[in-house]
Amino acid sequence: MPNPPRFMVSAALSLYRNTHALADRMVPAQLAVLDRLFGVVRTATMGTAARLRLADHLADGPLDAAALAARTGLDLDATHRLLRTLASLGVFTLHGDGRFSNNRLSHLLRSDVPGSLRNFADYMGSASNLRAYSDLDGAVRTGVNAFETVNGHNVWDWFAAHPDEGKTFAGAMRDGTSMDAPVLAAGFPFGDAGKVCDVAGGQGTLLAEILVQHPGLGGVLFDEAYVLAEADPLLRARGVLARTEKVAGSFFESIPGGCGAYVLKDVLHDWDDARSMKILANVRRAAAPGAHVVLIETVVEANEAVHPGPMIDLHMLMVCLGGRQRSRADFERLLGATGFRLERVTPLASIQSLVVGVAV
Image 1: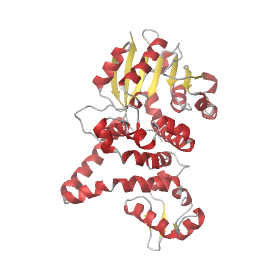
Image 2 (image 1 turned 45 degrees about the vertical axis):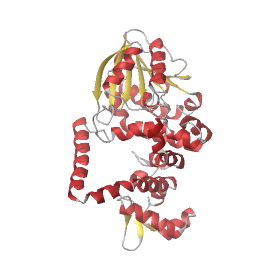
Image 3 (image 1 turned 180 degrees about the horizontal axis):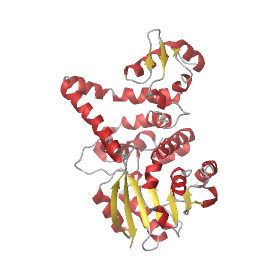
Image 4 (image 1 turned 90 degrees about the vertical axis):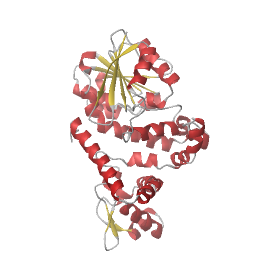
C-alpha cells in the first residue's frame, strides 16, 4: 500500500494528539496521570506478547487461554491475565466466551504481515531495555546513558554478546525502514547522483528502494561484513543485486568514494557530536565537491514538545553513546564543521525529515 501524502500524515498525527489532549481535559487529572504511570505495563505486555508470538497463534481464529497455553507451554492463568490486560488496552479482543482474537492493533504484532511491529515491540519490551529505564534518574543526574550503567555493556557490545537481541533490533530497524522507504527514496533526486552509497545500510532495504525508483542509478551498500552477508536475498528479490556493490567496513574508519550522494538513515542520532562529526568527516573525505550527504533524521527543536520527537530523543539518552535527536541548527553546525553546507531540511510524510548537505 503506498504511503499517504504528508498532509494526511500530519493531519492524522494532529488528530491523535488533539484527541488525547481533549481526553485529558475531560477526565480528572489524577486519572490521566495514573494512565501514564502504567506505561511500563503497556510496553512490557506488548513486548512479551510479541516475543511469545501470541498474535501469530491467533492468526487462524479465536482461541481461549487454555488452548494458547497448551500450544505455547505457558501457564494458563497467567496467559489469560496477560491477554486480558492487553485487551483492556485495545490490543487483542476478549469475547464473552473467554476466547481471544486479533484486532487491528494486535494484527501488527504478527510476524508475517506488511507493516509488522513485532520486532519493535519485542525490542522495546526486552529485559535489557526495561532495565535501562530503571535508572532514568541516574541518566538525568549524570547525562550518561543508563543502558551501559545498568547492563554493564554499551548497547552495541550488548547486541554483539546477545545475538538474539541484536537480530531483533536489526529486524525492528529494517521493518521501520521498509515502511518509510518509498517516501524516503522519492524525497531526493537520487537519479542525478550517478551512484549512491547507503552508509550503515543494513541489508539494503532503503538502497534497494532507491535503486528501484531510479533505474539508471548505481548503488554501494556499506556496512559491517556480517550484516552484508545477509543482504543478497533482499537485493535479488528487488531486482537490484547486479547494480549494487557491497563494501564492508566501519564508518569510523573510512567510507567508499566515488558517489554523488551519501545516505545516512538514523545514524547520527546514535552518537554524540564528536563521533557524529567523525562519521561526517569520513563522508566528506570520500565525497567530491558538490556531492550530497542526505541525513534521514527526526528533527527535534529544543523548545517544541511535539510528540513523538522528544520521546525518541530521551530514548537516545537512555540507550546510546551520547545519542540525541537534533535541531536544524544542530545539523547546520555539524555539517559546517565537517566540510558541508546545509542545503535544505525537507519534512517527509512520516515523522522524519531529509537533512541535505552539499560538500564544499
